[in-house]
Amino acid sequence: MGKAIPVIIVVAFAVYALFDVIATPPDRVRYLPKPLWAIVALVPALGVVTWLVFGKVRTKPAGPPRPQRPIARGPDDDPDFLRGL
Image 1 (tube, one colour):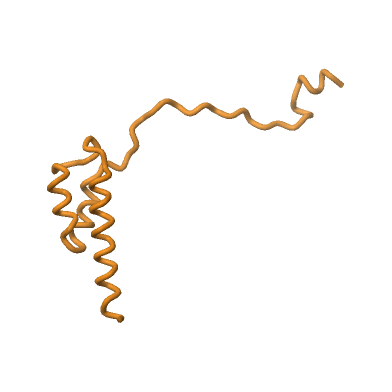
Image 2 (cartoon, one colour):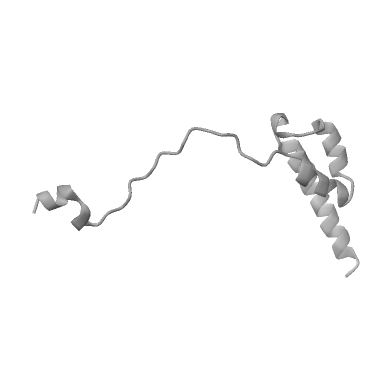
């Protein structure tokens, strides 16, 4: 049983990398086309690490800026509240 655990881990990472290659949009893949990356990802250990390090662009594309939430203030810092006293 102890000898099977490393094999199971390597196979699990290979399956994860294969599904990651399939799910990644083509414009986020670097250096090789997706079909070649799918083959590389199936190479035990080395292919998985190669895909995770070199194959995928990790930065998210810039989108619209998120709206800023107003800073919560106490009632004694709110001029409208103080005016109503």
